[in-house]
Length: 238
Image (cartoon, rainbow, N blue to C red; front, top):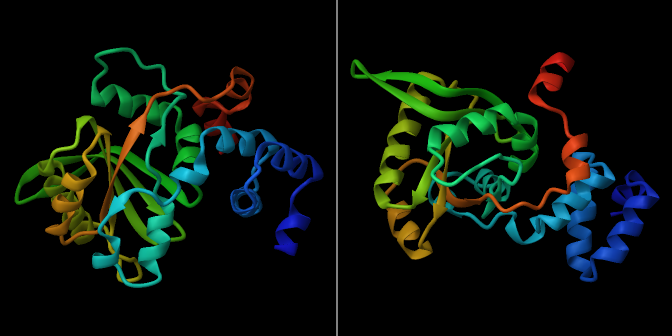
Protein backbone atom coordinates (compact mmCIF):
# COMPACT_ATOMS: atom_id res chain seq x y z
CA UNK A 1 0.00 0.00 0.00
CA UNK A 2 2.87 2.41 0.75
CA UNK A 3 4.23 1.86 -2.76
CA UNK A 4 0.79 2.56 -4.24
CA UNK A 5 0.43 5.76 -2.25
CA UNK A 6 3.80 6.99 -3.45
CA UNK A 7 2.92 6.28 -7.07
CA UNK A 8 -0.23 8.40 -7.15
CA UNK A 9 -0.27 12.23 -7.37
CA UNK A 10 -1.85 14.20 -4.56
CA UNK A 11 -4.76 15.37 -6.76
CA UNK A 12 -5.81 11.74 -7.16
CA UNK A 13 -5.88 11.28 -3.39
CA UNK A 14 -8.00 14.41 -2.93
CA UNK A 15 -10.54 13.13 -5.47
CA UNK A 16 -10.69 9.71 -3.82
CA UNK A 17 -11.16 11.20 -0.36
CA UNK A 18 -13.98 13.47 -1.52
CA UNK A 19 -15.82 10.99 -3.75
CA UNK A 20 -15.35 7.60 -2.05
CA UNK A 21 -16.39 7.18 1.59
CA UNK A 22 -15.93 3.43 1.89
CA UNK A 23 -12.31 2.62 2.76
CA UNK A 24 -12.24 -0.73 0.94
CA UNK A 25 -13.62 0.84 -2.23
CA UNK A 26 -11.13 3.69 -1.98
CA UNK A 27 -8.26 1.21 -1.68
CA UNK A 28 -9.56 -0.60 -4.77
CA UNK A 29 -9.41 2.54 -6.92
CA UNK A 30 -6.07 3.49 -5.40
CA UNK A 31 -4.59 0.12 -6.34
CA UNK A 32 -6.12 0.08 -9.83
CA UNK A 33 -4.84 3.60 -10.49
CA UNK A 34 -1.33 2.61 -9.47
CA UNK A 35 -1.37 -0.62 -11.47
CA UNK A 36 -2.81 0.94 -14.63
CA UNK A 37 -1.21 4.39 -14.54
CA UNK A 38 -4.59 6.14 -14.79
CA UNK A 39 -4.78 9.89 -15.12
CA UNK A 40 -7.09 11.68 -12.71
CA UNK A 41 -9.80 12.01 -15.40
CA UNK A 42 -9.58 8.30 -16.21
CA UNK A 43 -9.80 7.39 -12.54
CA UNK A 44 -12.88 9.61 -12.14
CA UNK A 45 -14.40 7.96 -15.21
CA UNK A 46 -13.92 4.53 -13.64
CA UNK A 47 -15.47 5.75 -10.39
CA UNK A 48 -18.47 7.17 -12.23
CA UNK A 49 -18.78 3.90 -14.14
CA UNK A 50 -18.85 2.02 -10.80
CA UNK A 51 -15.93 -0.25 -11.70
CA UNK A 52 -15.67 -1.39 -8.07
CA UNK A 53 -19.04 -3.16 -8.26
CA UNK A 54 -18.55 -4.46 -11.84
CA UNK A 55 -15.05 -5.91 -11.68
CA UNK A 56 -14.96 -9.72 -11.53
CA UNK A 57 -18.76 -10.02 -11.48
CA UNK A 58 -19.33 -11.93 -14.72
CA UNK A 59 -20.75 -15.44 -14.55
CA UNK A 60 -18.02 -17.83 -15.71
CA UNK A 61 -16.93 -21.46 -15.60
CA UNK A 62 -13.27 -20.55 -14.99
CA UNK A 63 -13.01 -22.49 -11.71
CA UNK A 64 -13.96 -25.69 -13.53
CA UNK A 65 -11.94 -25.14 -16.71
CA UNK A 66 -8.76 -23.28 -15.69
CA UNK A 67 -6.03 -24.07 -13.14
CA UNK A 68 -5.20 -21.82 -10.19
CA UNK A 69 -4.17 -19.01 -10.14
CA UNK A 70 -5.15 -18.59 -13.82
CA UNK A 71 -8.83 -19.00 -13.01
CA UNK A 72 -8.82 -16.25 -10.37
CA UNK A 73 -6.88 -13.88 -12.59
CA UNK A 74 -9.20 -14.53 -15.51
CA UNK A 75 -12.25 -13.89 -13.31
CA UNK A 76 -10.89 -10.52 -12.25
CA UNK A 77 -10.37 -9.44 -15.86
CA UNK A 78 -14.10 -9.65 -16.57
CA UNK A 79 -16.84 -7.19 -15.68
CA UNK A 80 -20.60 -7.24 -15.55
CA UNK A 81 -21.96 -5.16 -17.11
CA UNK A 82 -19.59 -3.60 -19.63
CA UNK A 83 -20.27 0.05 -20.42
CA UNK A 84 -20.08 1.01 -24.08
CA UNK A 85 -21.29 4.56 -23.55
CA UNK A 86 -18.83 5.92 -26.13
CA UNK A 87 -20.74 4.34 -29.02
CA UNK A 88 -23.05 6.36 -31.25
CA UNK A 89 -25.91 3.87 -31.14
CA UNK A 90 -29.49 4.24 -32.33
CA UNK A 91 -32.51 1.97 -31.92
CA UNK A 92 -32.49 -1.13 -34.06
CA UNK A 93 -28.73 -1.24 -34.40
CA UNK A 94 -27.26 -4.50 -35.70
CA UNK A 95 -24.54 -6.53 -33.97
CA UNK A 96 -22.14 -5.86 -36.86
CA UNK A 97 -22.64 -2.10 -36.39
CA UNK A 98 -21.78 -2.38 -32.70
CA UNK A 99 -18.72 -4.45 -33.57
CA UNK A 100 -17.56 -1.86 -36.14
CA UNK A 101 -17.94 1.02 -33.71
CA UNK A 102 -16.05 -0.85 -31.00
CA UNK A 103 -13.15 -1.31 -33.40
CA UNK A 104 -13.38 2.30 -34.60
CA UNK A 105 -13.14 3.33 -30.94
CA UNK A 106 -10.57 0.70 -30.02
CA UNK A 107 -8.68 2.89 -27.52
CA UNK A 108 -11.86 3.46 -25.49
CA UNK A 109 -12.90 -0.16 -25.93
CA UNK A 110 -9.54 -1.33 -24.56
CA UNK A 111 -9.90 1.02 -21.59
CA UNK A 112 -13.23 -0.59 -20.75
CA UNK A 113 -11.91 -4.14 -21.26
CA UNK A 114 -9.02 -3.46 -18.90
CA UNK A 115 -5.26 -3.79 -18.86
CA UNK A 116 -3.59 -6.55 -20.86
CA UNK A 117 -5.89 -6.89 -23.89
CA UNK A 118 -4.19 -6.64 -27.29
CA UNK A 119 -6.53 -6.32 -30.28
CA UNK A 120 -5.90 -8.73 -33.15
CA UNK A 121 -8.85 -8.61 -35.55
CA UNK A 122 -12.57 -8.39 -36.11
CA UNK A 123 -14.39 -11.10 -38.07
CA UNK A 124 -11.32 -13.33 -37.74
CA UNK A 125 -11.56 -16.18 -40.22
CA UNK A 126 -11.21 -19.82 -39.19
CA UNK A 127 -11.74 -22.89 -41.34
CA UNK A 128 -13.01 -26.08 -39.73
CA UNK A 129 -13.85 -29.16 -41.77
CA UNK A 130 -13.82 -27.06 -44.97
CA UNK A 131 -16.38 -24.68 -43.46
CA UNK A 132 -15.75 -20.97 -42.91
CA UNK A 133 -16.34 -19.37 -39.51
CA UNK A 134 -15.79 -15.80 -38.39
CA UNK A 135 -15.08 -14.65 -34.84
CA UNK A 136 -16.61 -11.29 -33.94
CA UNK A 137 -13.52 -10.00 -32.12
CA UNK A 138 -10.19 -11.67 -31.37
CA UNK A 139 -7.73 -10.47 -28.71
CA UNK A 140 -4.62 -11.74 -26.99
CA UNK A 141 -4.23 -11.11 -23.26
CA UNK A 142 -0.57 -10.54 -22.45
CA UNK A 143 -0.93 -11.20 -18.71
CA UNK A 144 -3.17 -14.25 -18.98
CA UNK A 145 -1.09 -15.47 -21.94
CA UNK A 146 -4.06 -16.66 -23.93
CA UNK A 147 -6.30 -15.73 -26.84
CA UNK A 148 -9.62 -14.13 -25.99
CA UNK A 149 -12.64 -14.48 -28.26
CA UNK A 150 -15.42 -11.93 -27.79
CA UNK A 151 -18.84 -12.63 -29.26
CA UNK A 152 -21.45 -9.86 -29.41
CA UNK A 153 -25.17 -10.58 -29.20
CA UNK A 154 -27.51 -7.61 -29.33
CA UNK A 155 -30.23 -9.76 -27.75
CA UNK A 156 -31.01 -11.60 -24.53
CA UNK A 157 -28.77 -14.59 -23.74
CA UNK A 158 -29.87 -18.02 -24.91
CA UNK A 159 -27.98 -21.27 -24.14
CA UNK A 160 -27.18 -21.88 -27.80
CA UNK A 161 -24.79 -18.91 -27.74
CA UNK A 162 -22.56 -20.68 -25.21
CA UNK A 163 -22.39 -23.78 -27.38
CA UNK A 164 -21.28 -21.79 -30.40
CA UNK A 165 -18.62 -19.95 -28.37
CA UNK A 166 -17.40 -23.29 -26.98
CA UNK A 167 -16.91 -24.48 -30.58
CA UNK A 168 -15.01 -21.31 -31.53
CA UNK A 169 -12.65 -21.67 -28.57
CA UNK A 170 -11.85 -25.26 -29.51
CA UNK A 171 -11.09 -24.10 -33.04
CA UNK A 172 -8.86 -21.23 -31.84
CA UNK A 173 -6.90 -23.55 -29.56
CA UNK A 174 -6.35 -25.95 -32.44
CA UNK A 175 -5.36 -23.28 -34.97
CA UNK A 176 -3.59 -20.57 -32.95
CA UNK A 177 -2.68 -21.69 -29.44
CA UNK A 178 1.03 -22.34 -28.84
CA UNK A 179 2.47 -24.71 -26.26
CA UNK A 180 3.35 -21.74 -24.02
CA UNK A 181 -0.22 -20.36 -24.14
CA UNK A 182 -2.99 -21.10 -21.68
CA UNK A 183 -6.39 -22.26 -23.03
CA UNK A 184 -8.27 -19.59 -24.94
CA UNK A 185 -11.03 -17.72 -23.10
CA UNK A 186 -14.40 -16.64 -24.42
CA UNK A 187 -16.41 -13.58 -23.45
CA UNK A 188 -20.04 -13.53 -24.54
CA UNK A 189 -21.57 -10.05 -24.40
CA UNK A 190 -25.37 -9.83 -24.47
CA UNK A 191 -27.88 -7.03 -23.91
CA UNK A 192 -29.66 -9.02 -21.18
CA UNK A 193 -29.41 -12.36 -19.39
CA UNK A 194 -30.96 -14.54 -16.72
CA UNK A 195 -28.14 -15.47 -14.35
CA UNK A 196 -29.56 -18.90 -13.49
CA UNK A 197 -29.98 -19.74 -17.15
CA UNK A 198 -26.36 -18.71 -17.81
CA UNK A 199 -25.08 -20.83 -14.91
CA UNK A 200 -26.90 -23.90 -16.24
CA UNK A 201 -25.63 -23.29 -19.78
CA UNK A 202 -21.99 -22.98 -18.70
CA UNK A 203 -22.03 -26.18 -16.64
CA UNK A 204 -21.82 -28.32 -19.75
CA UNK A 205 -19.15 -26.29 -21.53
CA UNK A 206 -15.60 -27.69 -21.70
CA UNK A 207 -13.93 -24.41 -22.71
CA UNK A 208 -13.39 -21.45 -20.32
CA UNK A 209 -15.89 -18.69 -20.91
CA UNK A 210 -17.92 -16.00 -19.21
CA UNK A 211 -21.15 -14.15 -19.95
CA UNK A 212 -21.75 -10.47 -19.28
CA UNK A 213 -24.26 -7.84 -20.28
CA UNK A 214 -23.25 -4.66 -22.05
CA UNK A 215 -24.92 -1.31 -21.51
CA UNK A 216 -24.98 1.75 -23.70
CA UNK A 217 -25.79 4.18 -20.88
CA UNK A 218 -23.90 7.42 -21.14
CA UNK A 219 -21.44 7.94 -18.29
CA UNK A 220 -18.53 9.67 -20.06
CA UNK A 221 -18.41 13.47 -19.54
CA UNK A 222 -18.26 15.41 -22.79
CA UNK A 223 -15.02 17.06 -21.67
CA UNK A 224 -13.37 13.66 -21.25
CA UNK A 225 -14.74 12.35 -24.54
CA UNK A 226 -12.81 15.06 -26.38
CA UNK A 227 -9.59 14.23 -24.54
CA UNK A 228 -9.59 10.52 -25.43
CA UNK A 229 -7.68 9.60 -28.63
CA UNK A 230 -9.48 8.62 -31.80
CA UNK A 231 -8.49 5.49 -33.69
CA UNK A 232 -6.77 7.67 -36.31
CA UNK A 233 -4.71 9.41 -33.60
CA UNK A 234 -3.83 6.06 -32.05
CA UNK A 235 -2.70 4.66 -35.41
CA UNK A 236 -0.49 7.70 -36.01
CA UNK A 237 1.15 7.25 -32.61
CA UNK A 238 1.80 3.58 -33.32
